[in-house]
Image 1 (cartoon, rainbow, N blue to C red):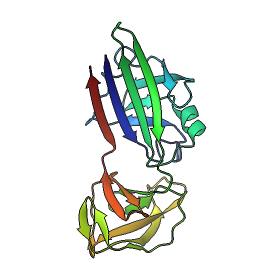
Image 2 (cartoon, rainbow, N blue to C red):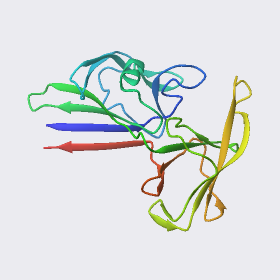
Image 3 (cartoon, rainbow, N blue to C red):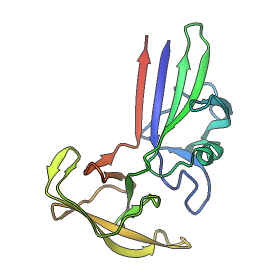
Length: 210
């Protein structure tokens, strides 16, 4: 028997909270999910919701200009998923050769998620955690290293893109007084109660065979 799990940390665009209102998971060139979706690329299959064993239908890997896992909107809404929550795809192969597909999630209700947006700064993706800014966390652990303080402070309010209909607030992250400069679209998670701040790996894969 074999279990393959892909864990994706969701962002607002994938959750349909951006300008397009589309719900999906974007698969970038750095990741390959063809093994879990082998046999039904561009065709739908049924997943089993691990929380209640109900069927999640019409999920498919859509390959074109972008590679996306689509058909996830009803599942997102059912579980009220937010940015930073974990979405887990699992392909389970039984010893008799049969294959089952599962969908699960882990919610991060009390954590703050920020995402780098080019040179504009960091956008706060989570709106369900009421927090006042500037936010100073001292002392804390940043990527498992002790730091005297981390400060999240307002930087500017501008349009994310030239065609964006709304203004977005952007913030700066200072680690011991030094501005944190991550790459575009990279994400940071803040666990306020535990004073832990860490950079997120948005895709993870785990394989177990026995």
